[in-house]
Figure 1 (cartoon, rainbow, N blue to C red):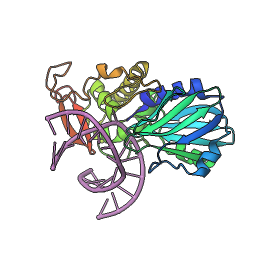
Figure 2: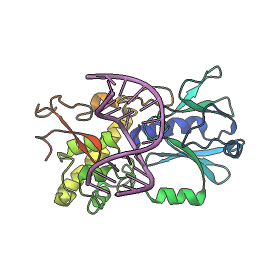
Figure 3: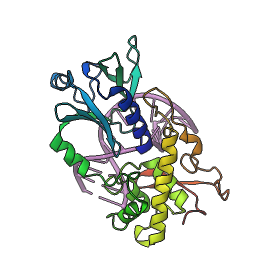
Length: 270
DNA sequence: GACAACCTGACC
DNA sequence: GGTCAGGTTGTC
């Protein structure tokens, strides 16, 4: 589900309530394909103190006091939601974390693509090294430079590649292309320096605006309070196929690019 | 670069 | 019944 603004919203909310707490117990409700929930996994986590909650690209990282980290990828439908003590597990709930101080957190994942993985420092460093720059932590020029030779042809495909720029997904790739007036299938080699910079600025702009509204709930996404992101009402092309372009009234088109649904204005984007 | 795979549910 | 869904990975 979530892209950078959604994962960052969850990171912030988790950090407020989890940092400094101790994992007192873990209840496994359902074993998942991608989620190791053996006795070893549980035993390794119980008693650990959570030092910090960080995010890199779309990956959440719980740094623990034993030099290891619990990484979580939400993929399409993963969720962390805080619950009360009388909470009864719902259909797709997978496990419950009980933290010191009485905090209870549920990990749920309808489609089971997401994963929790316990990794040591060295493994984590390898994982994090794969990602491109964090788009909100570098200058636009740095992002623009990443688009010079990304090893792929189409603009949108490059934006979705986490090794090129970290954290951009299907919604914000489309939104950034629209804001920059660049066609999503445009050949990267045809972009001029000015185009790349405009696209880089558009990426930052849309991510910042979405983050300020706690992300986009196109379908399932909710934050740790079960609340939806408000940026859905501000999308300009995503999920607006056949609706008039907000600039020129031409119907927004939807095509497939790199196997992903892609929305754009055929007039405003070239 | 295309395509299938992982899985469940919503919608036409 | 078929198609599609905020992601990623592996195989031609």
